Image (cartoon, rainbow, N blue to C red):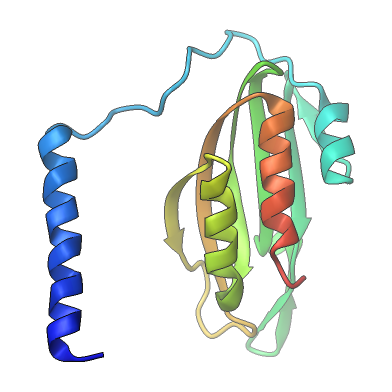
Length: 164
């Protein structure tokens, strides 16, 4: 489009930023949700059945790790070297938190973001962990609150957007 259209669009963005900051002058210090229980008691089978993979249980928390591979300097790197998507669940099945990291190809970034946000999962950071890897892998950190089953379904939907 024209420079005028671009300038008008950028102006709308800054107007929206101004509107949001006027309504919320102080940054939030937490996400919504009731406090988590003092002891986690996530039912691993619930998450495993939804995601279709096994995970690890530790002190009532549950974690699943899904590996990918890339090459750096002609050496294959994978799941154990940090090229992975992971999710850690804590809390209780009716009041849980999930946080983790998605390893995505560049073309997968927007579909995964849209899927996570559609299901109410917050995006915390987007960055890279490596340089000159092939294929290029980006990492996005996320955090969500809700019922364990709903959070696992949200992750499954986001995973389904990836090319694999």
